[in-house]
Amino acid sequence: MEKQIKADYFNDELIDKAVVFQPGEGEAIRMGGFACTFKVTSELSNNQLGLYEITLPPLTIGANLHYHRFMDETFIVNKGTLTISVADRQVEVKEGGVAYIPRFTPHGFRNDSNEEVTLTLIFNPSMNREGFFYGLFETLSEQPVDPEKYLKLYNKYDSFPVDKSDMLPIRK
Image (cartoon, rainbow, N blue to C red):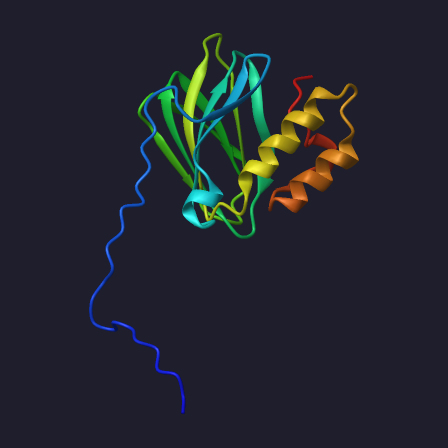
């Protein structure tokens, strides 16, 4: 005799899995004045969404021109003015502004001002992006920065530089 599995195919099971992060909450990693605070992680969202608060000190490059094959990226500027490179143009995104960058769109971002910039960065899907941030902090803290190690990290986490000779986020 077969075992019968009892299931309710007609009603939704409602479960409260909500997570709320107040300002200043979430795991933060820091290097100098640069900071990344994990808000909605890959684990929380089943890899569907990654939401991170980024702090860029004055005159700091977040990333040079690169693209993603499998995820979209959204920038929401919370404080200051963020300069975003999109293909061959530069756009200044002011406080309260949003920039949506679909996959296969070359883009980069930086703080060209003398003031700190804070932004919310969203990846969809997230593809374990936290690992990228941990690896980024490790790689950039080594001097000199190893371009091969940086590229390996980039590629593992769905980031592909447009120009490998200008991929490191270091002002010249």
